[in-house]
Image (cartoon, rainbow over all chains, first blue to last red):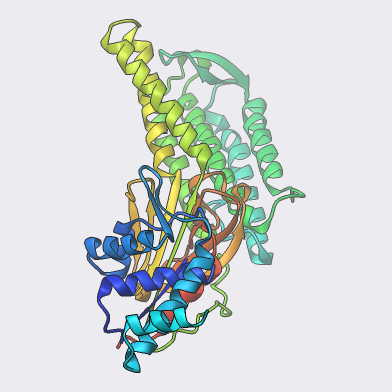
Amino acid sequence: MLLHLDKADTRPLHEQIASAVRRAVAEGECRAGDRLPSARDLSSALDVNVNTVLRGLRELRDEGLLEFRRGRGITVAEGAARRSGLQIRVRELVAEASRLGYSRTDLIDMIRGLA
Amino acid sequence: MTVTGKDAGPAPHGRAGRRWLIGSTAAVTILIAGLPWAAHGRLPGRLATHWSGGGTPDGSMPLWAASLFPTGIWLLAALAGSVPWRRSRPTARPWRAMALAPTGAVLLGAQVSVVRANLGHADWHDARLPVLWAVPLVALAAAAGVLAWRLTTRSTAAPADSAPALDLPEGERLVWFSRTANPWLSLLAAVTGLIAAAALVALAAGLADPAGLWPVSAVCAVTSLAGAAFSSVRATVSETGLEVSFGPLGWPARRWAPAAIESARAERRLPSQVGGWGYRLSGLGTTVMLRAGDCLVIRPRGRRADFAVSVDDAERGAALLNALRTRRPR
């Protein structure tokens, strides 16, 4: 599995880690059921605190991309590839909207108005 | 005595290597066959060739047999070692030298011991063997084996120039992870661990004879630990270099900084090429073999042998390692 991290990224580290793993899942670096490197391994390879790594991974679990299983470590959830692709685009949309001065509520309203 | 150097020639490929092999085989043959004849004036008619545990001789041979018998064994071994086996690959070759060198050392050492024990006696029944005669023999064989290994591994193919390299985007950090597990080794570890534990319980309860059970328990415990350590392996390539860690605990681990690596590549390897599963030393260098197939192979700087680990996606791991290696530090 290859993780990309942008050195110029100014977002909090846990978000950067979450988006790096999200991208890896979306690009098929790891498939459903695959085991992720342990939080400890990620932390030492990325030179980031373990708790920060765990925070990023927990975000992805809440998005339904990862599953935490006792004894089996962290695995990629079923259907995560499709979901992560969509997640990435939603995030890009939110970021673009905020750059243009639209709040999330504005964005939600716009989506509702599509129907 | 110059025994150790004899057939430990450089890798037996190429004409020079073959000449070396033939020359050293002939030299050992002449020494083994000729020694009894060279000293025959001071030897009894029959030579003591076998000793009982107490050091008294219990077997003998006439001079010609004492000369020809070990020579025959040596020639058979040399012949078996030099037959170009149909299935042997170039990588298997160092094993021939490594098998032949200690064999020659032991046979020659034994012949020297026999002649020396019989020297100056009128009757073979008087010949005595020094008490610790086997110790130098074993040491000699080990030295010959090690020397053969060092000499034959020197000429492993130089790292290819066409090593893959990844395009490393400026301002981006890449980290590569890979993991391989071998469920059979986990099973082996579990089964032997259970036997070791059961044996310990039986010992503690006084259910069985301690003399018979201790070795069983110890051997099973060691097998279990080794099996567990090599049941899975993780390889990580980051800016700090390559880290290979073993077992569920990630310990032991080996690390190389990017600057300590001369080159990295991916290669297909089979357990039959490296001598089995687990942590293997062979003519190919060190291989951590958990399954047949793709291996990440590195050549550490200043070393003549490679280090390889069987992990998936080795091509990209090697490419990233090469990119990190050639990139100038900021």
